[in-house]
Amino acid sequence: MSAGKALPADAAPVILWFRRDLRLHDNHALAAAASSGRPVVPLFILEDGNDDAMPYGAAQAWWLHRSLERLTARLEAIGSRLILRRGGAADTVFSVADETGADAVFWNRRHDACGIEIDSALKAGLRARGIDAQSFAGQLLHDPTRLKTKTGGSYKVFTPFWRALQQGGEPDTPIDAPSSVRSPERFPASDRLDDWSLLPTKPDWASRFGEVWTPGEEGAQARLSVFVADRIGDYDRTRDFPAIDGTSQLSPHLAFGEISPAVLWHAARLDEGSRWTEGLVTFRKELAWRDFSYHLLYHHRKLDSENIDRRFDAFEWRRDDERFAAWTRGMTGYPIVDAGMRQLWKHGYMHNRVRMITASFLIKDLLIDWRRGEQWFRDTLLDADPASNAASWQWVAGCGADAAPFFRIFNPVLQGEKFDPDGSYVKAFVPELAEMPAKYVHRPFEAPAPVLRQAGIALGTDYPQPLVDHRAARDRAMEVFARIRGGH
Ligand code: FAD
View 1 (spheres, protein in one colour):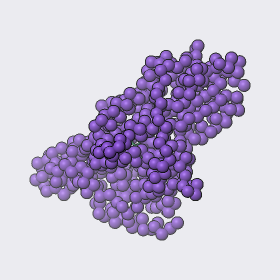
View 2 (tube, helix red, strand yellow):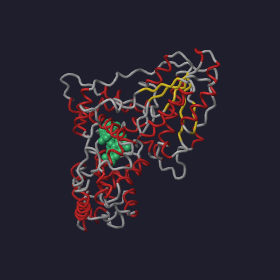
View 3 (cartoon, rainbow, N blue to C red):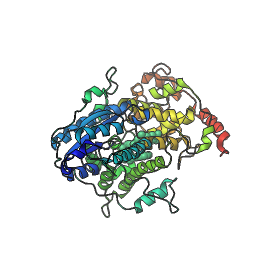
View 4 (cartoon, rainbow, N blue to C red):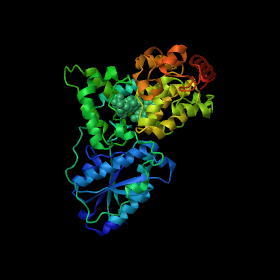
């Protein structure tokens, strides 16, 4: 029996367990805890001790530190406090319940495989101890089990999923942050955030992140306001051009739950006769891709390690560590690929179009297993997400649900010329090519010697020769693919 049973029922605190929902607004678990009128103990657990449970790559650890600072300040502004603990989720919740006499634990559900497992085990454990356990929705537009095909199955193709999502009713209207939360007489002890060593030190490779990002829910709200005011109307036309700030760049905020997808859905409101309709609908559709990825993850718990199309189990991947390293460093000799990989390293982010190009290059030009790329992205993306990352990598590889067919192989030169026609995206991240004329900026290896000289480039010295010849690599990929094509 928990210590909470010794206290009068109305005085026993509620533990509010923060997870990937580091926000006060549109937070259903928080709203329920606050409106219960009982003292609330806000708790964040850095889950470790088990690789699967540690859901943060190195880049996200930086974000987490900054986001927890903001959450702490936000809670203090409404008279509360954030308790930080490190350890296994269940053990930590049990011990905080014992220390505080809490007889209820509220949280918002996580929908990744590990989160689901932890949730169910914890719920059972708490109830067995007589502690009320309540979990709430809010990470997605709809819980992943809500949308079902006519035969009650799961969706494998996006378009019918999107149709069902649109017909499934609007996500709940977002709720406000509580203006106050009752505190217990005494808060339990908390770790010091600095002692968690989440920020890199030597070298401080995250030093440029702060130029682009403001973690925390105020940062998310500010980005949303700019996006809705200036960009959403043109979103359908600009979202594919990496040199244009055409997308919301809200993905890291979403990954940490600093803003809810319901808030974004409702912000992209369709006013009747709006001339921005295409932009708004396209934006909502992208949010639906995020839900679709979680739907897939829910039905394929090993989405990051097992091909959905099992024919790909026999695919002959190459273990080419040198070329993999060149790809990670943005030294492939294909400027659009290199710009993307360097944007990732510098800002912990990469534009969606370029993610597709860099992923295709790794998988199809270098024949390196998509899972190595997925892991690299997981460690370096600030928005790394267990569902969207794995589903997107499988999608590019051609082994996923509703995937691009394997034989659709991006030509990195043509993609660059189409989506970055004057090379400004490339030049922003590959400064060696700053003086290259637009005609050759995506194909420096074809530039005549005087052009290279004028641009101050000695290929192979200042900027790499291409790692592979794209045409030959394409033929080789098709041969390897042909060997698994017929299999089931
Ligand atoms: P916007 O264009 O403004 O879109 C709004 C939101 O919709 C995004 O923040 C995101 O939550 C969602 N969204 C948009 N496109 C997609 C998509 N294709 N799939 C799922 N959700 C989408 N997205 C992640 O959030 N985390 C990842 O780890 C991730 N890994 C990816 C890996 C690869 C290889 C590829 C091709 C795509 C990946 N994406 C991932 C999807 C997409 O690239 C990003 O969501 C998007 O670039 C984020 O920028 P934004 O917020 O400006 O997006």
